[in-house]
Structure formats: structure tokens, C-alpha cells
Figure 1 (cartoon, protein in one colour):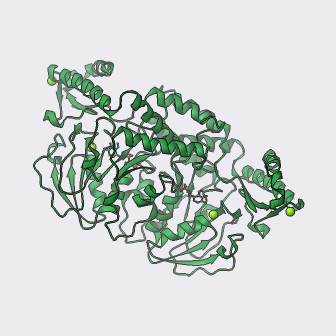
Figure 2 (tube, helix red, strand yellow):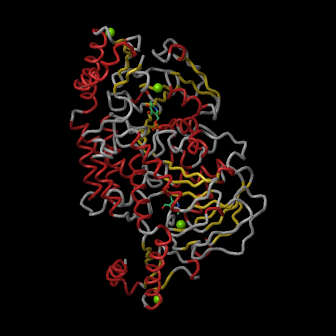
Figure 3 (cartoon, each protein chain N blue to C red):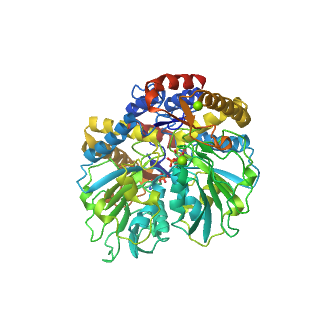
Length: 316
Length: 316
Ligand SMILES: Cc1ncc(COP(=O)(O)O)c(C=O)c1O
Ligand SMILES: Cc1ncc(COP(=O)(O)O)c(C=O)c1O
Ligand SMILES: [Mg+2]
Ligand SMILES: [Mg+2]
Ligand SMILES: [Mg+2]
Ligand SMILES: [Mg+2]
């Protein structure tokens, strides 16, 4: 049986982002220079970074006390930056998939990791519940959308320790209550920008609580204090991220995105339910991702795959 | 007195690179997808990564036993990756400028640093010589082109320990004898690509000699073993880097670049010498950069600055 996963893999960026980036590659902000050549210290790019940060905060309604930074290295670098900055003795992790396991692996370089729950035994087809987080854990880490397995935590959890979330594949897909989180991070390449830039939303007062010396580039404080300009940022990807943020606002923001995503996901899940050729891989409805819809098809109907794929894509 | 530095700051990429990137932002390799959306696992991008790596090796005549990797995070991330991977007890550094000092600062997180020579006392206006490298140093680190101060080490040094070089601002400006080095690294944004990608040329047998556990993303071996595809690479910057590499080969490679750079630098330095309004800041001729030509002008001639700038650029 082949497993299908709609929307995993390459991101689909708005035409607005692509068009404006193509233009800026030739002539950036009327400078006559390509956005590929412009210095990150030029006022035109400083304005881009500033707007991207401001709009990011506005769209997610990020409360004061939090900072947004843009970083190179991808979400995988955050797997090690999080424990580098936060883990003193012990951290709690929820193992909901490949990415969660990779995050756990990196945390183990820095201290004890308690896996408070795991759905590995059933091929990550559900989100573990009813687990207990040790009260002395430095933080609790979740992966909200498990890109490969089609599960999603769509609720902002109330927990007893700082909450850290990898939102690589569902950031900007719904409103979030940022005040429930210590750090939210992700690669920007799923919903926001071309690959090459990651984001982190950091509650400032959770930093500075470890005695471990932190190399400058791996310290969130460096990037916060320097407005993501400590060293050369990925200029073009940040420019493109700004275009998507402008587009998102114009579409009605994350609340409108959520409606759209739920509508599309419901159409797809109902067809999967109705049609006896298909079966959703995620057991519980409440665990199903609205970003990545996973299902299986019986081998004997394999020749219908393409037709179904086209139908599904036509939904939108 | 205002100090002038020709060629620092934004890189100037070939028109070939800009044109091909602008096209790929709209339609990448005939896929109908933007290079901003394509998955790094798609065969078309795998081919780009493969060609970029191969051509990088070819142009610098990199011997076997060395690997080339492309990484996010900028050259500043290499300041900490180098000691993370190589520093057991002690490393030797040459302090030739701002970037060298920053590299030294990061190495101190991992062990003892012996500053074997420094030109800080004279505002980094020369390259220290006649220093001794401790025989028990794990490596010796140099910054070949000191972007801000206009000095350059244009010789491949013979040293008694593995040699590590930051070549951010002079890579591909001359042929290098790679066999003299353990690691050569740099940000690609000065000569090769838009910001967002760094490169490292790593001699494989200098790795694996420290007992320190290395987080996966900070371990050179990870990126070597996965052909720079362990996680999502900066797809567009790597595509652009390939365009510049193709262009460089077409221009006659690094030997032709060196001739061109020397010719341009000589014209500029002779004018500075001849003209009594100007004075080069780098004392010794052999220390002068062919990439960043630094000079000062007396305050009373300040109104001539623009005219001179235009003349200099016209040489370029
Ligand atoms: C949920 C999640 N986390 C982390 C990653 C890794 O991101 P990167 O490739 O930017 O390191 C991905 C990539 O697809 C992902 O989907
Ligand atoms: C010689 C040298 N090293 C390191 C850097 C830092 O590079 P990055 O901004 O990519 O971290 C620069 C940047 O200009 C440089 O010129
Ligand atoms: Mg997963
Ligand atoms: Mg069904
Ligand atoms: Mg310098
Ligand atoms: Mg003179």
C-alpha cells in the first residue's frame, strides 16, 4: 500500500511572492541592484527586515515580551539551539514523528530527555494524550504538525513548564495563543519563503537561565539583540518571506487561512471517508492535520491513483 | 580622514547569475515550478547540488580526500563549527582583523587559544610574520582576506599543524594549493551567490579526532555523508552559486580571475601611489589585498571623493 500525503514536500508560495521576488532579483526597491547583491546594511534591506519582523508579530498577535528572529540553518539547527539555550538538566519531549525524534536526538547532547509520550508503536498515527510532564523539566517540546504522518496538535496546550513548539509546517495556518509558548520555531520553507531561512519566536525571559557558555551564533540573545543582523542574514529569503506576510495580511490573516485550510481538509477527508477505495491513516479525527492529509489506497486500485490525485488537487 | 575600501560590502555577481536566477524564480529547469518552491529532493535540484559540488572541486583543483559542503548560517557559524569539530585542547590563531578576532572569540568556547601574532596594535594594517605555531596546536587559523582592512595572505602557507582558512572574501580570486589546508570555509555572498549559503572544503581525515559529542547539524561529517542534503539546503542560493561557477569556468577559471584582479588592483594602487591626495593604509606591498583596496584621503580634499570613486569604479 502506498501512503499519500497531500501538501508535504515543496511549499506552494503565493504568486504575489514569486512575482515580487523575480522583480527584486533584477531591481530591488528601485536601487538598480539585485536583491542578490544588496548589502544587508543598506537602508532598503534594513527596512525589509524591520517590516518582516513587525508584520510577523502583527499577524500572529504576538504579545510584548516576545521577539521574532530570522536565522539561517533550517529548522534542524533549531533542534540543537533550543536545548543549547534552555536545557539545564532535563527536558520533556513528545515523540510524534520523524522530526520529533530528530529533535529528541539533539536534546540528548545537552542533558536528560524524558519522552513523556510516543506514538511510534503505531507508526505515529495518533497524538499521545494523558501524559505527565515532570515538574522539574526545563521545557516541554512538541511538533505541532507532523508533516510526514499527517497528525497535528491544533490546540495551544496548557502545561506546567515552558512550552516549545516546532511549527515548521503549520505556522500561519491558524491563530495561535503565543502567550502559551516559550519558543515557537520552524523552517520558513513550507508556508512562507524559499528554503534558507528559519524563524524563532522567543519569550525573552526564558533565556539566560543556563550556565552553559553558548557560542555567539547559537545564542538566541545574539540575534534578538541585533535584530537578526548579527551577521549576514539570508537576504533574498527574508525579502520573499515579507512578500508572503504582506499577502497573508491582504487575504485576511491567519483566521482566514484557518477557514480555508479546514474547508479544503474537510472536503478531502470526507471523500476519503465516503470512498471505499481509501482509508485515512490517522485514527482519531481530532489528531488529523489540516495541512497534510494522509491516506492509503488498496494495491488493486493502484491504476486509479493518478485520477484521484488530480481530483484532489482540483479541490484546491 | 575617511577610509575607503573598494569592493567591501555587497558582492557584485555576474549578470549571467542574476539573469539565470531571475528566470529560475519563475520557471526552474523547465519544471514549471519556481526554484523557490521546488523540493530539495527533486531530481532537478539534486542535479544542481551535484553540479555545484563537482564544479567547485574542479575550479579549485581540489585533490581527493577533500569534500565540499554547502551550509546555512553564514561564515560566522563556521567560526564555531571549526573549533567544535577540531579543537581538543589548544588552537593557534592569527589576529589580522575584525573577522579574525570574532573567530578567536568563538574558539575560546572550546579550548585554549594561542594568538600567535596580531596586527591589532597598528589597526590591522599589516600581516604579522615570523610567528611560531605551537607544535601541539590542533590547528592554525588564518583569515586570508581581511575585508575591512585591505590586507591579504595571498600565499598558501606551509605550517606544522592543520591549516584552517576563512576565505570568505577571496575564494575563487586565485588558484590555491588546497592540499596545504585542513579546512577552507567562507560565506558565499562576497563572490559567488546571494547571502544564505556558506561553503566548507574539508579534508576528511582531520575529522573525528575529538571526543566531544557534536550536535548533528554542527558536525561536518553529517553534511559530508549527506552530500549537503541532511536537511533542507538553501536551494535558491545554491542554484545561484552554480550559475557563478559555470560563469567562472567560462571566463577561464581562477587563474584568469587572478590576472584580472591583479590588473585592477595594480591600476588602483598605482593611482593611489602617484596621486598625492591619497595614501594606501596597508604598509607592505606584499600584504595588500587584491580584493579590497584600502586608502585614506585628506579631509581638505573631501569634495573630490565622488569624482575619485567614479574614476576608480570606471577602472573596474
Ligand atoms: C515539522 C518539521 N520540522 C523540521 C523540519 C526540518 O526542517 P529543515 O529541513 O529546515 O531543517 C521539517 C522539514 O520538513 C518539518 O516538516
Ligand atoms: C573575511 C570574513 N569572514 C567572515 C565574515 C562573516 O560572514 P557572515 O556574515 O556570512 O557570517 C565576513 C563578512 O563580511 C568576512 O568578510
Ligand atoms: Mg514527522
Ligand atoms: Mg474510505
Ligand atoms: Mg577584517
Ligand atoms: Mg599617494
